[in-house]
Each structure stands twice: as structure tokens, then as C-alpha cells.
Image (cartoon, rainbow, N blue to C red; front, top):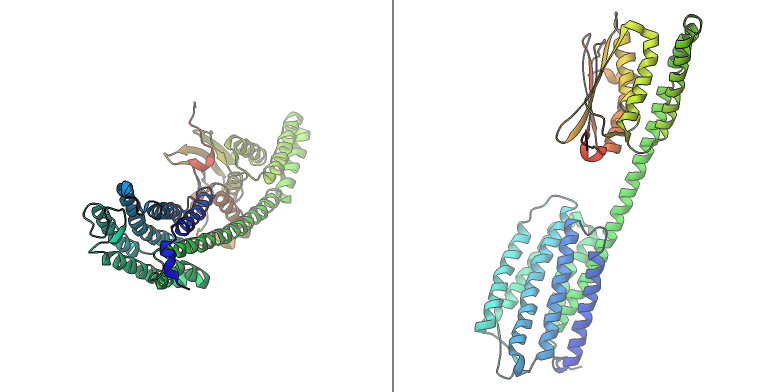
Length: 444
């Protein structure tokens, strides 16, 4: 079959190029509306598809107006779109490629920078050629001719394709076999298409590039689907961990010894001070109800609610320990949210493992303050203190702190810092970023 006749079938070439442009436009619309479009490599890929669309329409315009002496200016403009945006396509693909790899490992932008620099110089030459004909020109009949420096077109194409191949091959260990082969197609397919250029030029190059873009689009979507599935698994694991921590906290909060001691205190109050006994029963009921409600909460709650629960707990402990337990509140502000049952367990630790273990008791101070970026809740006591290096050997204390840390990190991006000194006391500081707490400035 004599392929060279395709060079004279203008309608066929125009239809094929416009078809390729429409396919590229569909890919562009799909990418621009994709939920993952904010990823760096997807942003580059969106620009890549837009560039390919303009390049294809420029080449289609060349075929449409070829031989029309009345539209030589338009022919030159279409040639600029075809040649210039073709080089720009290679530069953007290099950036897209590096962006895709950087989703897996931090790599240098140097390779993409080299390709981009060469292509930028070439685009400048394409622009100059519209006036001096060094790369291409049109005669008085509107027919296209290669310029005296046309070899630069092939040189830049070959250099760019080789560089893109080398980048993919060099980082192939991070891409896998499927990813490597797909990303190589952008360079390999045009090289294969070059064998048809002596007979049919240059439509096969554009069709090869379009086919490669389709494969890369599919690769990116498969990769994003895989990442989405992995994220869902991680989310499920975090939810499982939160559920386990809620159960663990519930069990620690409903310790039989605490309940027995409270009920025993109420029993004696019934004989000595019935009114106070009734008040204590109300507080104990509130404590149990708040515990049950907090355990079921899967979202952040207003700090005021956690604060009320803390006060109820401490009122019950005051019944037991009297003057041996001093409570100090230094609440600077409350207009923020916290994960449920993250502050109250720390207060309980301060009482149970700190103040009440020290002869003569001590004080527990709860305070809140804010910085420009975070809300900070501090629970400090003047109790017995403990050795931070060995506290993990204390099962209950360790489990409680571990659960609080997990809930803070997963639900609010917060952190817990603990400092302690034997026979001096312990300080627990909860820090929660304002952007995660629903923070509102007082008076707003």
C-alpha cells in the first residue's frame, strides 16, 4: 500500500486530528472535574491535556488552510501552535512525570528542568521562524516548506524523548512494571510512529501521542483508585482503633473501686447529711450518664461539656477526700472543641495516681490558654509524681495515656505532653490546633 498518498488526503488528516483533539478534550474534562485534581501531578496532567488539545487543533488548522494564499498569517499561527505547543507538551510531561514520581519518593526536578529549558529555547525559535522562516515558511501559494534549520525540530524532539525515557527508566523501581511501561509510551509510541513519517507526515506522531495520553490517563486513575482503597483501609483501621479506645476508656471510667467508694461515701452521708447525700446521688447519676454519652460520641464536643464532666467527677472525689484534695480552676476560655473523654481521664490520673497517693494530699489545677495556632489545656497536680522512663510498667496509667494520645491525634490532630517529678507533681498539656477545634474567639 502506498502510504504517501495520505499526505494529499487533507480531509482524512483533518478528521483524524480533530478526532484526536476531541478525545483529548474528553480526557481534559474528566481530569479537570476529578476529585483528585488537586494532586500536583494531576494539575500538571490537566495542563498537559490542554496543551495537547491546542497542539492538535493547530495541526488540524494547518491542514485546513494549507494552500490558501489568503490566510498565510493564519497558517503561520497554526504552525506556531503545532510546533511550539508540541515542544511545550514535552516540557509539561516532564513536570507531570516528576510530580507523579514524587507522590512516591522525593526526587529532583533537575531532569524536568533540563527538558523545560531546551523546549523554552525551541519555542522562542518557533516564534522567530514565523518571521524569518528558519524552521518553516509558507510560499506565496500558502504551501508549507521546511526551513534551513528544520533539523533543530528533529533534534529537540529526539533529545526530549530520550530525556523522558531516561527519567522513567531511572525511577522505574518506584513505578512498577505497569507504571514504567505506560509512562514510557509517551516517548516510545512517537518513536515507533517515526517509521511511518517518510510516507505519511506528521499525523501518525499526533495519533501516537494521543494514544499514549489515553493510557497514562487510565494509569493515573487506576493509581488513584488504589490510593483511595488504601486510604479507606487506613480510615477503617483508625475507626477500629477509636472504637477500641472508647471501650477501653469506658471500662477504665467505670472501675468497680471508684463506684464502690462513691456509693460508700453516699451511704455514710445518708445518715450524717441527707441533703448532701441527695446532691451526691444526682452528681453520680450525671457522671454515669455523661460517661455513657461521651463513649458513644464519634466527633469533637464543646469543651464546656467536657469541663462539666470534669467538675462532676471532682465534686464526687471531694466527697471522699475532703481537704486532702484541693481543686483550682483557671479557665481562660472555652470556645473550642475537644475529643470526648480526653481531658477527664487525665484529671482522674492526677487525683488517683498523684494527689491521693501523697501523704497530706495536694492540689489539682485545670487551666486553658490559647496561642496563635492552638488551644492548650493543662492539668497539673502537686501529687506523688512518677518516673517518666518507667511509667509504661504501670498498666492502667499507661493504657489511659495511650488512649488519650490516640484519640487526640486521630480526631483532632492534637498531642499530649507529660512531665513529672517524683514527690513534686505531674503536668499534662493537651495541645489541639485551632483549625481542628471549631475555635471561636471570645465575643465573636
